[in-house]
Each structure stands twice: as structure tokens, then as C-alpha cells.
Length: 128
Image 1 (cartoon, helix red, strand yellow):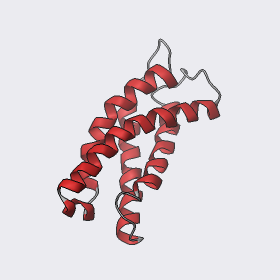
Image 2: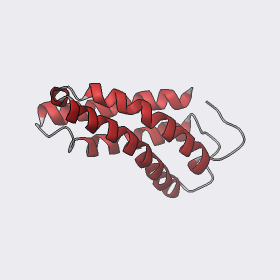
Image 3: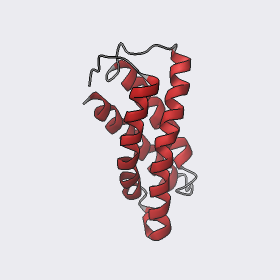
């Protein structure tokens, strides 16, 4: 449950940064995904470390963050593929990037949880 909470908060951060960059700063919806993704990954790592996977960390924070970033990047590839495909299929969605972001988030969730649990926060006791 904590993993979903962290992901939800990360989604809000991602969507907020993405929306600000697209609508206020006038960035393209694809380019804006880089900074919004990094902001969301940092927030979800901090939350997952403290809540969902508390006590399961076996690496120093820097090593753990790098592993988490790699895992999240893998999930983000699935997310971004769906996001970009929807914008390409329906260009009007580029003006409302939260819609394709939601669709991509579902695909990324399964990948991110599975790989985080296995490679970043291994252990017997799961607190989520």
C-alpha cells in the first residue's frame, strides 16, 4: 500500500512539473518529461525508502538511489513509450499531457514495483 501511496505522490510531482514546463515555460511535452521524471523518481525513492521498504535497504543511500534510478528508468521506458505513442496518435493530447501520462503510469507501475522489490530493496519482510 505504501508503494502505491509513494507512486501517487510521485505522480502528482511528475504531473505538476510536467504541466508547469509545458503550459508555463512552453517546453515541448516530450522534452519536459526529463525533468518531471527526475523530480518524481527522487520523491518516490525517498518515500519508498522510508515507508514501503523501510528496513530492507542493504546498500548505502547513494548506491541504493542509483539502483532505484536504473529500475525506475526501465519502468519509465514502458511509461514513455505509451505516453509518446498516445501523443503521436492524438496530437491534441500534447496540450493536456496528464492524460497520456496516466496511461503510461499504469504500465510503469508493475515494472517499477517488481524490479524495486527484487533489485533495490530485497528482503523477507515487506511493509506495504
